[in-house]
Image (tube, rainbow, N blue to C red):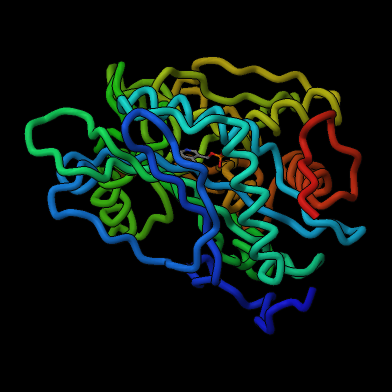
Length: 341
Ligand SMILES: *Cc1c(COP(=O)(O)O)cnc(C)c1O
């Protein structure tokens, strides 16, 4: 298979349209067979449920070229089950989890020429999503839905290495108690845009959201979970019902315990503990881990001891081990790597 002639090492994190995507439609209570199509556009009625009441959920995962030249995906079964959880919460029909994996397989195969070569730092980003498609004007779930998966090659998230970022404690909340913070829905992102733009205008890279009920505990950022390393080298990561269960974070917890022999604590994390941590980072599919060097809480600066120059040493070990597993340099736990080609 001939690779596309793209400047892999200089790709950004943006949308590059490829030829093939997967589509399946839900009507009269059933999903159709689904197929690969070349049409990148969706034509919907003006009153479609997705436009009126934001009935849409999504996922994000990547396909990688491994050191030995295979194309693989990382734990797509967890994306399948999380999309099912998201769909149930928005009263949408579940796209069967085995069919989700099959759709990923078909899209990656159809776009194999766009999977960046090993060592380029780039990957093929996959975006599965579903939406309510038929007209809905009274507030109720749609009866018809579309499930899609498209692919877009994305560059290394950090060009020239991961520099620690500065984040601020947001005055906005990302998720309500007993709300939708734990599902991957566009609605959580729509309402975060004002908060992130406000943070950017004030000179910060990202927001730290606190628990909305008491504003004393650390939750997450707009699109990534937190990990912290204590001075005695434990991994601490916040637990709350309104945090999105990041697959990267769950994988890092496993890697910390089983590959690096660390103690892992998944628990509520008080904001007041922040000053005691040795390292801090954000984790998610896009960047894997972004180190955090400084947190600003209404003018009060909390400096993380690992500093503003580079990733802390334990964060780096976690990053190297997890990316090593994803790229096939380090043996993966059973079931983590789905070989596509
Ligand atoms: C997608 C997402 C993450 C990261 O999840 P991964 O499965 O690791 O990509 C974290 N927080 C939010 C709010 C998200 O939407």
